[in-house]
Structure formats: C-alpha cells, structure tokens
Image (cartoon, rainbow, N blue to C red; front, side, top):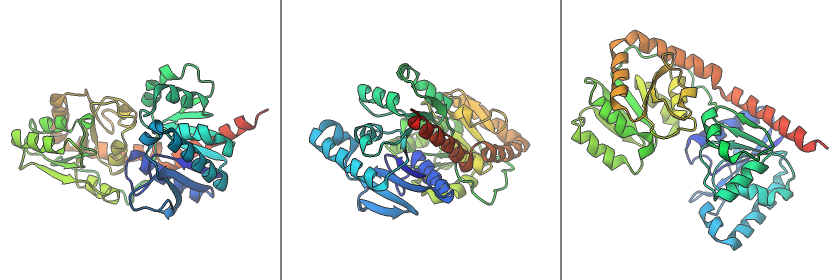
Length: 363
C-alpha cells in the first residue's frame, strides 16, 4: 500500500502532530508500506528530500497566502496534483491543519483514492471550506473523544463514518525506575497562555521544598519569569528553554512528577503520554482529552482547571505519600504501553485505510 501523509510540517519541525506522523510513518514503513509526507517548506530545506528515512515533499507556500491569492492557489493545486500523480497513493492521510484538506479536495482528481482526515486540533480554515472538508473526506478520525465532540455541530450533514484513534508513541527503552519521592516537578511545552504554566507557578508557591523545571519557549516566557520572581521562586524554578525531542525522555526522567495545568481543551495531551512512558505520574487539568490519558488516582491526579490550590493539594499529597508516587509511576508506564503504543495506533489506522478503500471501490 502507498500512503501519502499530509501535514503542516515534518521533522525536524517539532510538535505533537509531527511526532505522531513521524512514528506512524516508521511503523508503516516497517510493515512494508511505501510512505511519503507532504508538509510546509522549512527555511534552508530542499523541496524534496529523504528526512529521517522518510521521503518528504515540502510545499514552498504559506497556507495563509493561499486564501488571499487566487493565482497562487491555482499554482499550488497544480503542484499538489503533479506530486500525487508521481507517487500514485492508494490512501491519503490528512492530519487536520490549515489548507491540507482543502488542497486535497481541489486536487483529488489527480489521484482518485480515499482520504482519511485526522483531527489533531481545531482547524484553521474559513467556515465554509472547513465544513466541506469535514463532509467530503471518506473517513474522519479524531485523536480523542473530546476532540471529536468539539466538531459535532459541523458534522450534522456528514454521511461517512467518524472514529476516535488515540495517538501512540514509540516506547522509550529501557524502562526508567518509577520515582520514590517528590523533589522535582516538570512543566514541558510551548510557553503560551493556554498551557497554564502560570497556574503551576502559583501552585508551587504553596508547596515548599519542591523544585520546578520549566522547559519550552514562547511568548509567555518573560511573563512567567517575572511571575516566578514576584512569587519568590527564583531559587526553586529553572527555565530550561527549548529542548530537542531526543532529549525529552531524559528530561522527564530527571523529574519526579509532570504538571499539565492546561486551561484550554487539550485535543490529546502528548506530554501526558510521554510522562507516562517514562514512569512519571501526571497532575493535569480535567479538561479536553487529558482525562482520556490520565487515569485519576491510578496513573496521576486530575484537578479542576484554573485552580492552583487544587494542583498544590495534589502535589502535596504525592509529596506526603511517596509510596503512591512509586505505584502511580509504574502503573503509568504499563497503561501507556498497553493503551497508547504506536503499534496499536498504526493498526487502528490500517483498519480505517482498509475500510476506506473498500468503500470507495463499492459500486
């Protein structure tokens, strides 16, 4: 089977979706499939290359420009059609973002094969275009039940099936030992308001004797650094900046607990899965897809969003009961291995590909 993955970006551009697509491509390639990726151009990267063992075509056009420049859109449709004709995909897997789904529909006559669209996050398309993409792709999937529910009002006229396929990740080996106490906690991700890292700082101020590592970069970083100083936490908070994906497992292992104080509807929450894989309990907001990953009182603790006191109480509870920290860490690793393996994710999509192919061939 020849599979064309269509995403906004690809390695070495890093994000949750890019990580998933990368691992999925490797799993499918190992299963004997031919795989290619279409993504947005990166500065200094060639239009076509083999990156990380995967054939990649990088579109040299910003999606925002396509909406406002009809002539540019026409040329991009032609380029997409030509690439489809060269690769001759049997399945096109669109990872919901910006113009990917729309460009596919406008160029689909070049490769009349079924498409699977995975919703990883809210789409960034004009409402009319978004509704048409959601209605016309053969198979629709979402990375969480929460994510799929958020699109329910736009799926009223959709005739094709919709599914939930949780993300999976390759399991880091060897398995780290679960933590035995709580001295260091970690926040990892983009430094933006939606991630709620300010809530973690306010929670930390209520729990003495614990260090916090904040890893990531973004527009909220100066504000978070100032808040840390205002709360008198300078000696207890370390801002690490951006961390390369290959260094993330070791970073997580250097902490005892991972905090995810998100204030927005996390579509999935990949950091929670990465923490679980490294045998680390997670204290997370009960919001979006996070409750589908974090099993409350089993692999971590769920707290109300926007509630530093609740997060502090959960952290203090783990600090006071180190045996629970060790137990949760071991259960988190086991749950991640059983429920969120890349093999299980690839198998679920393989079933959708088969279903889509059978449907498009039906008379």
